[in-house]
Length: 554
Image (cartoon, rainbow, N blue to C red):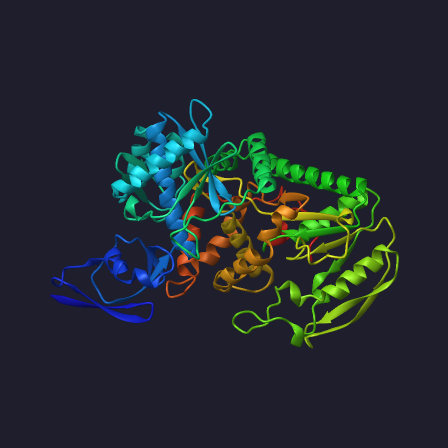
């Protein structure tokens, strides 16, 4: 017998194996410590590299397990759940095509294209079949093959588009997962078997289904799904745009770039966005909206959006003025604290709401007000410039609290026009492998922080969880309050951003806490053909805010 000395979440643990050549699987170790975790353990991190639970350990090491309450752990659970969903549908509906579309509320929206439109009874059948597959505890077995072998395999199984996409993969190793009679390629990690999926539900929603996993606060309960009709409509609009442009997957984008047809694609995308901006400006003019509120999560391009909207408003003979919410911060000592005792500048109560609402009301009544100027060095509010507006001067306010009713509680709704700016990825790798919207925003931020703020990718990645927590608390709960949602993503942008972000991610060493996240982003970026020629990208494009060359953002 030989003893393995392991450190698991800062606690020393000993496990015994038979001899020097023996090892123990991570899932066996996970079984011993699972009660210490709020979620289901799905993955392990060793030396900042992620490993599936079927990985064998034969040496002393430090292990950090990841559960469904972490982003990486949640992705593994969700990905494995989609595999079971695909298996169930393909067993029930011969020759159907399942597409994993996008996240929505707390779930994942999927569509099943069968010989007829599916209904609530089909939902019940699919759920029952999924429960059968989970109860059977089928192994999810990984085989690593060469790119040539994988392409030949998928061609033989009539999965031509999947085979064609693999041609673009930069590394030669391809992971093929087998589960019972189903074989597929997933670009992320998977659970050891279907029996690990303890908590799930499936709902019928519009033309598809919503897959739900475990809650953060109680893993035995399914996440609550809150319908988001406005956001859902934007996804439908996005699909129409993708059809118009002939781009719905990374494969179709790669072909457009290889055929040098990307110039027209860029012009169509920019024209569609300008058309949408013009429509928004027309509504503001027609309905005489005096206050324009813009809210968006990080790296949505709200600065460029606000400037472009301002131009369209001027075309409509309006003269918008902008007011910065930052100038309405309360004095430093009055700033609320977070759970760690630090100043919480993202709290809505970090803003002098009473003064802000009074100034807005006075401006709308035609009075002159003195706008405060916040001195960040002293941490104090000081007197700023005087401002008086007339009836053709709408006020543009942008910030994380733009849609929170508390921010403008004294202003009648008839005077407000609320805009939510989102970044919804229009592309998926293929029908079964989606690209999360969050990943696109993170890549944008890494590039922008490096280009204009002198930050390396490590700093941006390690601060991302904090940024996301602020968004979940202050932005996402209010997105359905918006009068209109604008999607600021560009279908071609990851092909452009790749050449900027790739060297930044590759520079992160394996001893960094940011290594596993950098590695994950690199894995899906390798499927994209780089688009280095940006001569067709106009200086007003939202993408210019991140890569440089913008004529509307300082």
